[in-house]
Length: 152
Image (cartoon, rainbow, N blue to C red; front, side, top):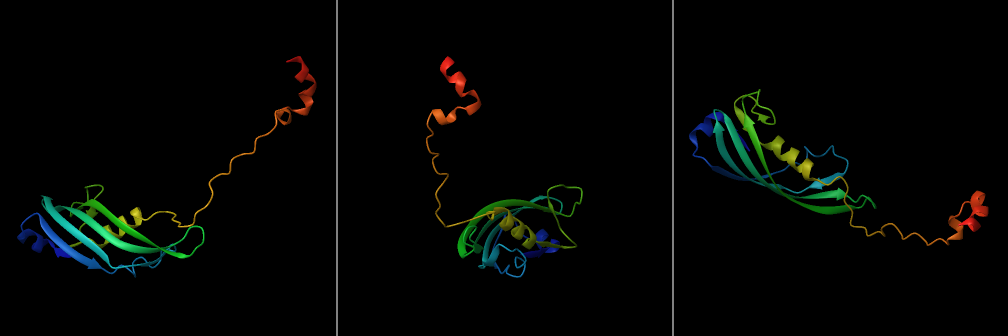
């Protein structure tokens, strides 16, 4: 979503926007993301000061990732919510800077998708650590101390 600051000054808040984004080219360089569907973004914009806006996102899409075990393509549904601050004030930390006169939410959406994407994902079932075999009591004794066993 791209809105100019002049447009934002004219709207009534909270202002709601629904859009579908094609982020295929932007996420092309990430080796574990094979593809991404259209990203549906529901945004609610609230004014938080002079040229400072809080935007609540609801992001939903479907990622095709590499299976961490088999490396086969698998589908991963992503459905997340986030709240971000956009401002022209460069002194405000943890906020997306409005570059020029246009508020662009694409970078924030991409950032939240990458943060919510699992580092590894698999559909393969595998056995957890096998149970250790029970050892006999005598094999636990160090041979150097075997003569002391009779003293106990």
